[in-house]
Image (cartoon, rainbow, N blue to C red):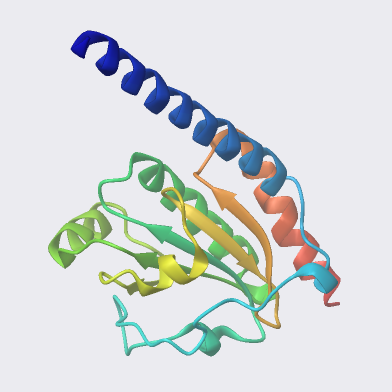
Amino acid sequence: MTHYLFAKNYFVRAQRMLLAGLLTVAAVAHADTQVLPTSNAELAPLATFEMPAFKGESKHLEDYRGDIVLVDFWASWCSPCRSSFPWMNNMTNKYRDDGFKIVAINLDQDRANALDFLQSLPPEFDVLFNPDGQMPEAFEVIGMPTSFLLDRQGRVRATHIGFHSDQTAAYEQQIQQLIHEDL
């Protein structure tokens, strides 16, 4: 009987994990190809929540109003995060003059882990720290990394769950779309 209960519980857990995975894949497929129209976009949450910065003074998302901003949630233990940093450096350098910025919000509870990561992959964009997790909770982050593309008014126009190197052209197209939208 105990083997039956174990197998039944295992099967239920496996079904739930499969369903969660399918929902994540569907969300990624949809999110990575679409920019929400302004009429459907909501303002980014906690825009005035202040966070310590890797370099310089503390900041909050409101400081970036007027720019197109990719808000990226990451952690030092996240392998796809490590892959995303060179791409984010490239996008920062390519679109900086067009009013595009990246704000990477680190979620490590131990800042030393984040600092080691940043030493190995120096960012050319702003990094903020939120070890208590208020920001990812407000943004409803479900995976690492997760990025949100904000327009110049601070509205969330696109979401990327995970970092997929085969989707970088689509990510960049979204950035370009928002840049040209405001011209």
